[in-house]
Length: 292
Ligand SMILES: Cc1ncc(C[n+]2csc(CCOP(=O)(O)OP(=O)(O)O)c2C)c(N)n1
Ligand SMILES: [Mg+2]
Image (cartoon, rainbow, N blue to C red; front, side):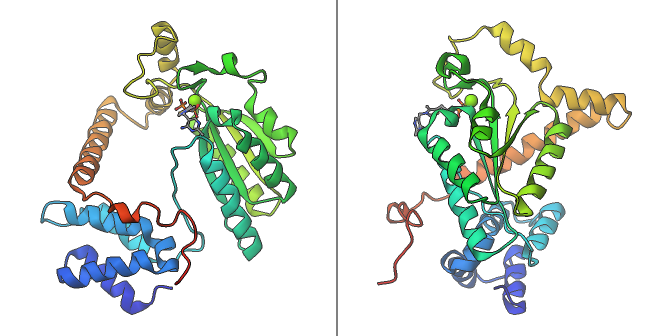
């Protein structure tokens, strides 16, 4: 657990006031201590990002966010990503089982595309999550295409939430283009799972406006279809609503876009300048590490 001395050192690290050797040692400690690294994996990345910024130090808002992340939290956010389709579903069920066995009030939440519902693991996970009433939130982003395959070309049942419901998982379809609908559905789903009432799957119905990847020429759909959906995109609908309510002007919107672009630039610069992960580390944390 994080104590006052450590908090002070972390604070100095963020300010860039810690000598290089001590800073490296501290980051190593965060990485290697099991509890700290669970809590602060994101923090370490943030600290490194701040240190990569020009000498003037962390911008005040980033500094405030880092300070907030130093405070002990009741819940824990553990982020994970995976390239294997449906892998996040498996990980979330495993993590939710841990939380349940430990009697915590944490929940595991995972995102995946509708393509994952075609995988066997998805079905095994729905079954076990419902059977064991695990605190897990399945957030399925149904954008109607899995790489170049339209949902209706590959699935006999295109109603994804119905598949989860068939296993006894509480499930619902939500307009994934409506920010407010998604927020309120997720809020009540999280309350349900945290209260120990079992897993929830939300099928967030949306559309993939872009290609699957840079190699995707999108020969499988009409450009008109994409343009039609673009009109209903969450950025367009939300800003239209905010402007109509007098809460935002076009200038505000353009400024936000520029700020978001600048933030991405910083992140890209940081990632491009970062060192490659050492090959020896590739298999770390894939399976539990057994002390020799
Ligand atoms: C287990 C597994 N099988 C196949 C693939 C190849 N693959 C990569 S993306 C993808 C489609 C995923 O569909 P979806 O989750 O809907 O993602 P989207 O195309 O909408 O980004 C497939 C089959 C993979 N990465 N992992
Ligand atoms: Mg998809």
